[in-house]
Length: 101
Image 1 (tube, helix red, strand yellow):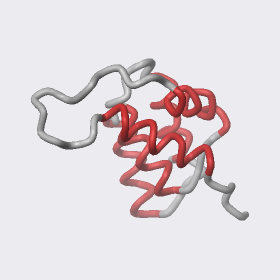
Image 2 (spheres, rainbow, N blue to C red):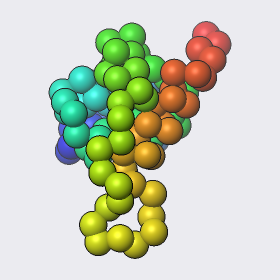
Image 3 (cartoon, rainbow, N blue to C red):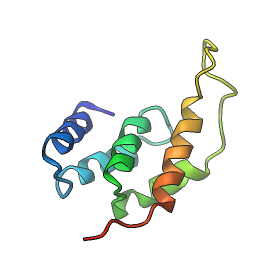
Image 4 (cartoon, rainbow, N blue to C red):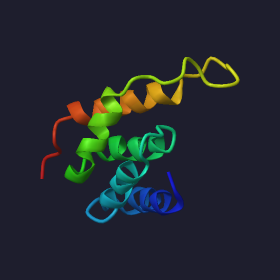
């Protein structure tokens, strides 16, 4: 997550506002391209918010269905590979029910 996205996530944690923070965090998913590690912070924040802005849905779908690119992290320390965690979080966002208004 970049500084702007981290600030938006921190603002959400403090205020509970999603109308102006979720779009900033979701934009990170759209801008990151193919790299999954930068997605992790944004995915974690959106899962915690229980929100998936429409603009981020294609990027989240892509992350959820992409192939794992690396067998393990380097050096191997038995932690889950970032690709696996990114796909797990993305799938959770896609299958979560929409929040009630």
